[in-house]
Length: 121
Image (cartoon, rainbow, N blue to C red; front, top):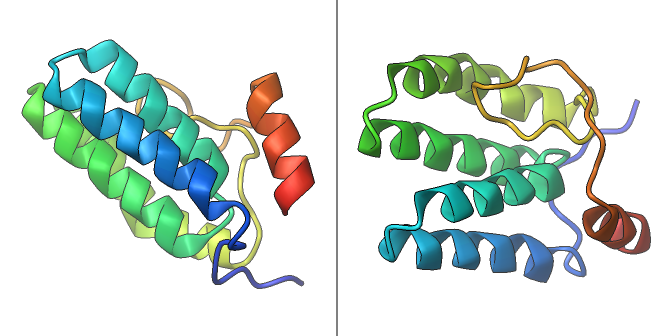
């Protein structure tokens, strides 16, 4: 069994770019675009406990900000369990992390992210 702890340094810039884009669009009140960057950060970081948990924390805060009870309630179990599943390598690959999708459903990874993940893992 493989235990994941830290994101590879070659992958970090892509994760950080998605988070930076999230903050940019959030600060410009472009919420739908901001959310899509948070989902992309989730896809990149979901195999790594700290990055995975951080994105779920941001998703929880986003849910609070937009007053979405569904998102807030949906993020709580993801926050509690997501990092542990990452640590032991049991993640639903490609899952975007929001409460709008089942937490254990694997999903298609966008082609650009798939290339990044294959190249830098």
